Image: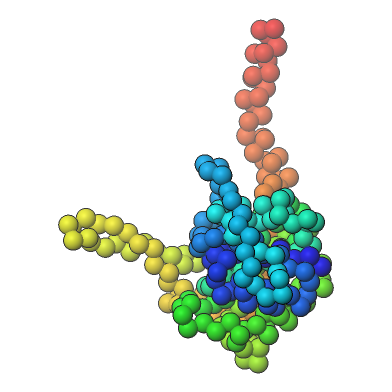
Length: 268
């Protein structure tokens, strides 16, 4: 099995090293990551300057790796189209420092890596860890748990057009309560703007992450299961068009189109 690994925390992030160590037991791993942190850049791609992929030898067992001066989506696209000799069978993005749940799917570069793979018809998985202080996180504590979840996913078939958004509690395998397949709770506004004054009396704003202060969460959602010590897995179908919606919106403009067709016919 050929596996492409990417992330948004940058190629030197401990989370990607931990993921490479895990996936090395499941197949042939190739790493293509941003050369610096690219958190919350969503699915942006680079158009305004050329992209360079720099080969690095920083992972054990001679794992092929490149650092790209672009976004997470750039990395996956370049890995699939340029850097890998054959298309990967699976793309894993992570392990992200901090969970990606609810509305995070629209902001996260980790998620964007998985989505880019799905756009290329390749099954994908995003992996995130519910921990925030990178200085105190020991990825060895979660590697066995990550391995077992990834091994189950790797020998299964992810439905076409779907990626799996996986979030791990920061706990060992022994203390993990299990796996919950849960919907995204899009009702939660996790990030809030906080106003501050600079020394000159001007007001500026900073986004504050209220994840650890959230309460009254929806029963059965990804937020509450993760807080309760479960691994959460959400299958996300990245299907942008729905036939019913297309037909509905088309009805709005039926009269307009009829008038245009009549005008063109009369003026031929």
